[in-house]
Length: 325
Image (tube, rainbow, N blue to C red; front, side, top):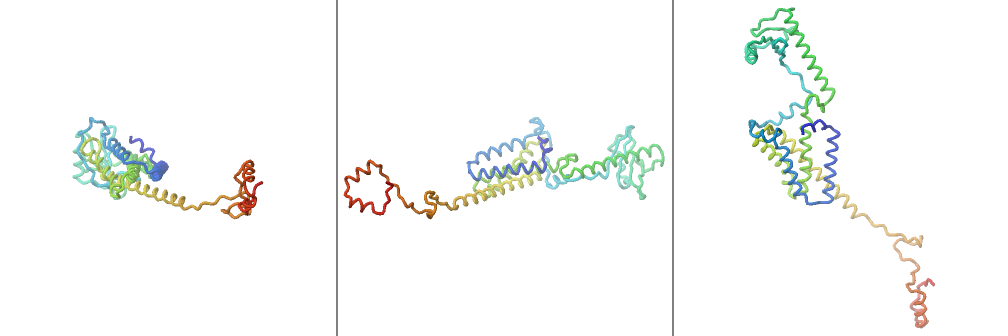
């Protein structure tokens, strides 16, 4: 599932938000019963996002660790910097530890404890003149110009050049780089996932508190389930933050959709009706009756009525009416 993060970029983000807006407009226009759909969607989110990544066999296999600082989730976003301290193991088993400043005796002893006792540990740092100084665990300098000193300096220079090239590649690819990690993509994905939840909750509930708190409550349930299962997922307050932002964004999109649909409905109701124009009399005012009223009787019925009607009476009745005959 994490491979989806490779496709998170400005184009896919725009398409996802556009689809969410279209769905919000549809719900605002049709107003179907979506409460059951919202609950089913929340259950699906809970099953997918809280399920162990490694399967049911990993339940209870990890410590219940909670990342309380939400900023930890955002620290690795952006162009990473090269490490100040790093270590390299040579082919002959020697271990080189680099630091910008000269290590203290305590730091030398700590490095020696974590390495193999049979391995030779060398420390490299920059002296006040900007050159690389090479010393052993006791702080004794390695003979300048010796093969060991040249090998160590050459190796550290290659490592620094490799890290500088990697940082330059991060800068060239920009914030959506996949070379230096997917931290930004992951945070954006977690935000977009809860936009549909916010849209559905807006139309599922009439209370504003339920509309705004449904998404954060679902996110809290997911993180609590991850903590209870103690699998390979760690609850993160940063996820709570971005999920809540996504749910709020969905609610705002739904509110916007309701406003847009309401404006168009009001315009449709208040639009004036244009009267039909009588094409038989172009010079007649719109809405007025035609000058000639069609006689609704057939010729046979007209003759029969005319024969049984007094001519004076008929003239009085037909006064002012133009007969089509």
